[in-house]
Length: 479
Image 1: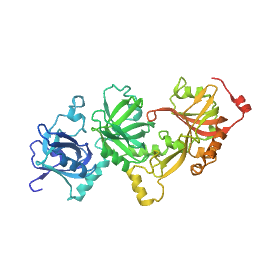
Image 2: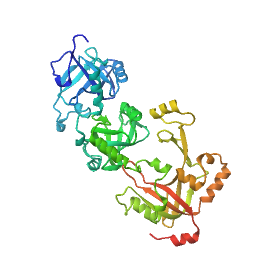
Image 3: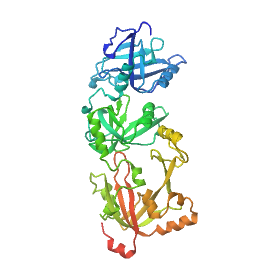
């Protein structure tokens, strides 16, 4: 450290040669490796975005051997406070969004016309040793103090209609959102390289749009941080320069955490307090399908609107469709599919901690925070079983194929618990099946239409009651 001069980002200029910048890591890019031309040697490059005051942010690019870059990536985490020692201070273009060059499009926008460059042997990164406790505390607090005002964030309702086709020019926006739910991490094969990539999908809301918008995260460090620290209905994110696009898969506007995006977790401000107050007023979670499969929050006694199967489909996805997220209906029909004793799914599992749905082969949740909780405070199975049965009802207008009989409602209708079901013999399962199959029922349903976070309509049985032919004849209607 001898001979270096501590400098703030605001004090940088291209003439500085021996600067020491102490800053907090706001984000970091996934390292890239490449083969040096005319050489068998592999080199690496990665970048960090750093902040040392309420006003200023700068990007720092590191070049070196594959091993050095991998070591930096392993050693330094998001929100670590580090020393950047003797970097090159390189002038960059003024950040006019209409003339961004490629190397700027894929990294956060800095607040100064410079970037830092470290070449192996000519500068280095090091862990800050907390020489000044007050300065360290001030830097640490910057992770909750956005460099852009919270009041400038747009509303989800406004940006949902900004992009309506996949060929539209990409846009970047600032948002203040609440994490509503996390989906399990999925593995996707890259079309370009063929390698397997991880993707975490979050459903985010705000006071203008509580139905939820999908936010995709592809960066490994942010996926890990989200799994460890972000909680549904408790974590607020200030997203800066998040990518806005139209997804052909979801047929809706979605958000992507890109290399240009910055995020502040649970920032401090009146706008955050207002968002949390709004979240406290939400009694149902329409973005969380599992919540409905476990225990519907709809009062069966309040469901009185009679429909045929044809009317139900018309209201959900046909000519009678409206802007409402969901509706209820009473259907009088025959139960024509009930695979209670066959190969179809009858019992599902969910994590006891986060309530995420587990696959058939899973006995424990993959989320790091769940694994930590179970390792410290739990004995026995890490999951709980629940009924999750596909049932189909037919009337004179058609067959409803999407309905599910689930959770506590299924236990009440069947007169069984999941544990009791698993002790039944095949003969007993068949007997139970034929108590229901091919009989007529009054079925009260909750229908949730397809949306940005749900690609297909979902139908949940809220209650069902066996009826005889004379009552069916009184109730039958034509459409």
